[in-house]
Each structure stands twice: as structure tokens, then as C-alpha cells.
Amino acid sequence: MTFDGGTVIADLLADLRLRGVEVQAVNGALRVTGRQAAYTAAVKAQLIQLKPEILSHFEREREASEATYEREERAWAVQYGCALACAFGYSDALVRRAEEALRFRPARAPFSIGPHAIVVSLGNGIEARIYRARRA
Image: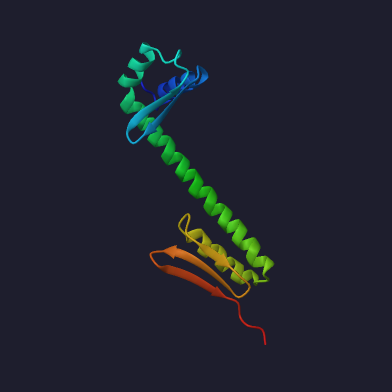
């Protein structure tokens, strides 16, 4: 059996799902649940033989999913943060500064936008603070 970038593994897992068998990676082991009738000795032997490749497949899926989440979360934060800053009446120049800070912000790092200041955590205890000039 040849492995071309996980296609065989993905096909195997999809076929098992169609037959009512779910395979998951849990702490370096495979957890198999579902229809007992579909979990034959041949399927068990195949899973045992391909265990390292299956675990590797799940790890690649997790990493890809995490990267996608971080990219989408960062894009959302920039869009939401800029819209909120505009709603609070910040100038275009300050909104651009907030956008820059939000783009450099690590995924999941906190930020807040209020009527008087924009605060963006940049990690390692560093924050970008953008204050609105007080009107006289």
C-alpha cells in the first residue's frame, strides 16, 4: 500500500465513517467507536498496521485546523477592531494604527477598544496603547 500525502489514510477513515466506525487519536492511541459489526478483525488489523500513519494524519489535520483558526481569528479581530474604532469616532489615522497593532497581535491575545483608548496585547507583556486626543 502506498501513501501519497495521506490520501489513503483519509480514504480509509472516510470509508470507516460511512460504515459507522469513528476513529480518533487520543493521547497517542487510536480510539475506535461505532458499529460493532463494521469493526471486523480485518479492519482492526489494518488500523494496527497503519497506526503511525493515522496518528500522523490526525496531527497534520490538527495543525492545519489550528493555523486556519488563527488566520481567521486574526482577520476577524482586524475587521471588528477597525469597525469598533470607527464607531467610537476615532480618526482615520488612529484606526490605521489600530489596524497595524491588531495585525501584529498574536492569535488569541486580548485587545480592547473603548471610547478613550485602544489597547492591543502584542505578547510577552508588551501592549500597544492608542489614545484619542482629548477635545478642548
